[in-house]
Length: 253
Image 1 (tube, helix red, strand yellow):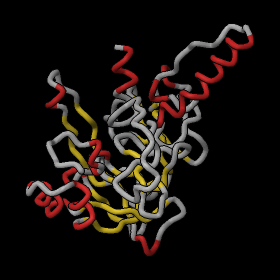
Image 2 (image 1 turned 90 degrees about the horizontal axis):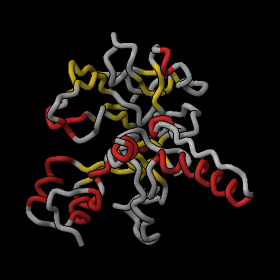
Image 3 (image 1 turned 45 degrees about the vertical axis):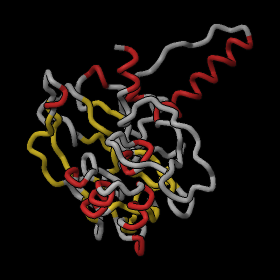
Image 4 (image 1 turned 180 degrees about the horizontal axis):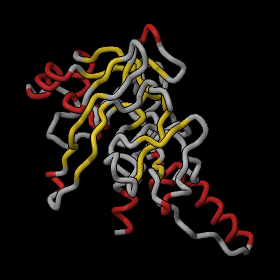
């Protein structure tokens, strides 16, 4: 279970390195090619190589992928909800351990480090994930609406946003926000169904939105990737909003 533990934790694609995009590609491109915990694990690997080069014994202990940020407890890191086994899994200053996808009555599970007050890009659908022997039948039980910042709205999972995501207006961006684009679901999917190119459908059926700013140093939360905006900055978006991360038979250029 060692490989699945790392490759499936931390994001929808887990431990990945998808490759750098063509700098000329203005949209429909990744801004950060690596997953959050790959970026977090690189300093550990570099330290091990440096130790070997010095003739010293390297530290080969590998952290849990959910705490692959060097145990800093940054935004999106997993944290303990009360069980002594996870006492060291704390959150950085300004963040609290939220049980947004764990049973609130079960203190033996882990939560996610999130701001005490909701920000753009934060989850806005709260519900414990209930596992099943058949993984296709895993379900989020008793999903409830969470809070978003004032003037922000919640894009929910039925329209493609895992756990919901708070978005704001491009005309009133917060410090954490950047102007990106969200595909308008029904016309976008109808465009794909006609066999049109993904890039064509995205250019015709997308609306501007204030999304969470991201980079290799400021990764997105689980199940989101850092995509390139038209301004060249990074914005957190569901991965299947990029054509190269879709596997449903769409036409590609």
